[in-house]
Image (cartoon, rainbow, N blue to C red; front, side, top):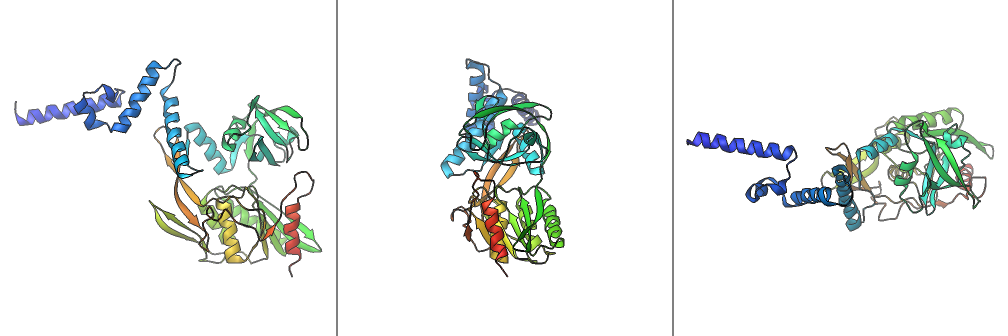
Length: 394
C-alpha cells in the first residue's frame, strides 16, 4: 500500500473516531492507545462516572442533572478552598432569572428582601404589586414557599422559588412584623418592573433636602439616577441624601457612570487587579451635575457596585456616610457562557477604592455617622439621622 493511501486511511480513521465520540460514544470504551490521544484523564474520568451512574444508579438519573451537579460541585470547591462567596454556576434556567434581575424586569410578586436566619425579611414592597395586594409589609418575614421551610437557605435559592411564570401562583408563609403567627398567602405572580430609582423632597428645619434611593446597578441606571437628582435640584433641594441601603450592586460600568453624575471628569472611581486581565483604572467621564452637600446612606446589605459608588463619593466628593457597616465585597466576577446555555460566574479579580482600600480586607465601609433603622417602629431612624446631618450643615 502506498504512503498516500496509508495517510488517507489514517485520516479517515481519525474522522470516524472523532465522529463516534461526538455522537455519544464513551471514551472509556475506546482502546487505551486511542483514549490516551483523545481524552484528558480527568475529563475521561468525569465522563466515565457519568455513564456508570446513568447505567447503575437505583433511580433514573439524566445526564443534564449530573452535569449540573458536577459543575456546581466544582464551584463549591472553589468557594470552600479559597473563601470565595461569589463564584457560582448558573443552569440555563437560573441564568435566565439572573439576567432578568440585571435588566430590572422579572416575573415575581414585587418586593425586596434580606436573608435572615428564619428565611427572608421583607425590606420594601413595590406599590400595586401582588405582594402589596396580599398585604405584605416591610419587616414581615417569609418563612416558607409552597409549604417548604426556607430557613437557613441562600437568598438566591429562596427568592428563585418565589419567582416564576407570570400568572402562576405561589404560596408563601409570612410571619407579620411583631407577630409569632404564620399566615399562608396564595399570591399570583406578575411581571414586575423594578423601580430602580425613586426620589422626593423632604423638608427639615425649613430646608429642602432631596431624597434619592437606588436599589440596584442594572443596565442604564445611571441615566435614571441623573434624572432623579436633576428633578430634586429643580424642586429646590439644597442637599441630597443618596440611599443605597439594601443595594447589592450590579454592573461595574454603571457604578462608574453613576459616580460621573456627581464627580468631575477624570476622577478615579475604582481600580482593579486581576490575574487574567491585569491592572485597570476606571475614571469618571465628565458632564457632572452642580455639586450639592451629600450624605450616602448605607447598611449591611450595601455591596459591590454600591460600595464602589459610596467610597468614590466619600473619597472624591467629601460625602458623609451614614448608617451601618457595608457588606465588604472586595472582588469582582465575570460571567462566562457554557455550551449548555448556562454560565459560570467566576471571581477573577479584586477592586480597590480611590484611596487604595480593598473593602473585603477592611470589612466594608465604616460610616462616619452610625445609624440604623428599628423595624419595630413606624419611622425610619437611619433616614432621619441622615436628613439631620444635612440640615445641620450651613
